[in-house]
Image (cartoon, rainbow, N blue to C red):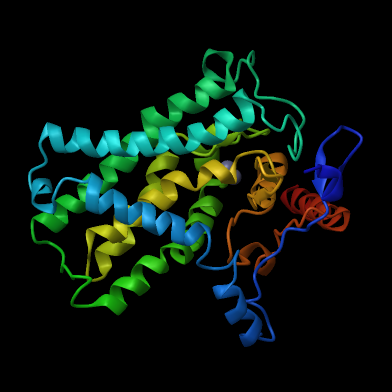
Length: 333
Ligand SMILES: [Zn+2]
Ligand SMILES: [Zn+2]
């Protein structure tokens, strides 16, 4: 599959998709109920493929790869290690698969790659000079550790009777609604946290670590400062407020822990062997890494449209962003 059918390269050889960043016809005015319903059940749509994929992975992680809830009432070294190793295994396999195919084997070279350059190997801003090594150290050293800590902390509360537990057998509709709204809640939470950490002193203290990756690769997804990891994985805390099942937080944390890999892949599409391709839908967030002050949201809620920070990839959108930033600078002086 050739990228020239789907986009073009600018003077600096950066790939620009023809497809504009867009949102599903759900949160639009006037409302479009038929189109919204069609989108919910179409492929790609609300459920398929990504939402269902992360929900299934989270359920499998809880049912087959977690110690039983009672083990968290006083977590032993073994319980903590098992949860850490499971999370590290998921991250290693998932992020590693994107990196292996696109950046080590370079199966499609720079076909569909937004920025033609490969990750830096000799840049002072990264640990050991290497973007990939730096990103991997932050991902496991801080990201997986804090994910595991949040998970064990919440399950400790559940195991010690501080939360009202529900069973999917007794309340299947409630259970279904809770696990399939994780995606929506995460979109909103990500936006709120992201706006917050773009303000000083949080930006200088924490978020600039993630933004060192102006040309992100899969491992950049969870390459964050520990303070940002804590805020990022705090999406799971909302489930303390509702009748609780451990699957809710495991799914939310699996979603938060894994979805940044395709979101930072740096490629619009992954080309498969049979000539088909999977659209990673990551151009909006790539533009955020490139320009910093646009597309703070990343998902299906059109929050950037509502708050005037949307960049759809077009020249017109780009001009609007530059005008907005110029206006902000004038206001500050
Ligand atoms: Zn990012
Ligand atoms: Zn940012």
